[in-house]
Image 1 (cartoon, rainbow, N blue to C red):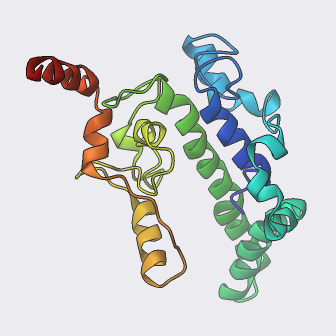
Image 2 (cartoon, rainbow, N blue to C red; image 1 turned 45 degrees about the vertical axis):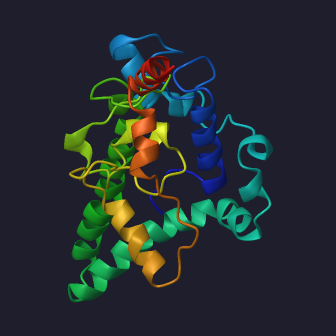
Image 3 (tube, rainbow, N blue to C red; image 1 turned 180 degrees about the vertical axis):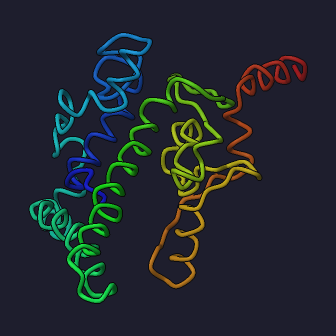
Length: 225
């Protein structure tokens, strides 16, 4: 209902991105495909939607979803969910404002089309901004970054460098002051028994991945010898 494509296609593209991050084969890197600079940023932000979106092989990159009957049904009926995401605000505006068609259209505009516009650009900023500007602290081979000012708008997704360091982590805001509303929501789902087997990264594992940690360990080993 965020209108970002069928879930199987979305997951396959995302996993392809992780398999070839910021190198040839990455569907939306600002550093390959369209070069660097503003042209690369535009490609990563939204240009890729017309060129490489949906290009990942589903059975290779999302076999678990392909085999899931519920996910297949949702993906097949994606356009119905898109229609529902527009119908709900239209009907809500119509009923809540005294059966006014004008109010229904205004609600459709703001809670429908404007909502989609903003959520798309916020999502796309992860692909572009969070691979171009920001900070890094873990030893990873790609160019992913953490962008603090985007954290609230992206519900914690802009701690993208952390995500690339630990892709299976349910929490992306790994630092004490790194706001991550999505992780809070997952924690609530876990408490009521809906979410299970939630993956969290221990402080020890985080320290092992810090830039320079490997060199420090090697130096300590040589000193001990």
